[in-house]
Image (cartoon, rainbow, N blue to C red):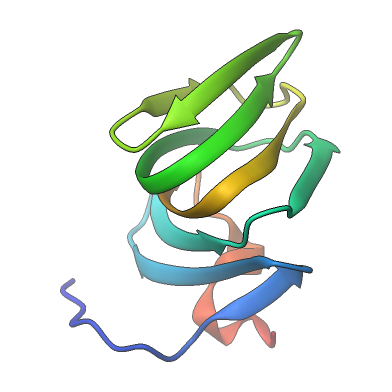
Length: 111
């Protein structure tokens, strides 16, 4: 599968947190997150392993009982069912891969 860039398809998950599925396969899904300074992603957990890369910006990530000061170029891997959240320190863009595929992020999921 191949997908060309376009600037449509973003959904606002929470105030200041927009998500777009970039591409997906049988076992993984890749999404882009555009995060506005001051936004908060409350702690949560889900049954997906989540691997991320911060393209630009500054986040304060909480993964389990640890906190990380993430800046452009940093990466992380969050095991399934581990609580995590983030505070957006400056406008940011992150790319994340979920395994298995998050059906709620599939383009035809009705969002």
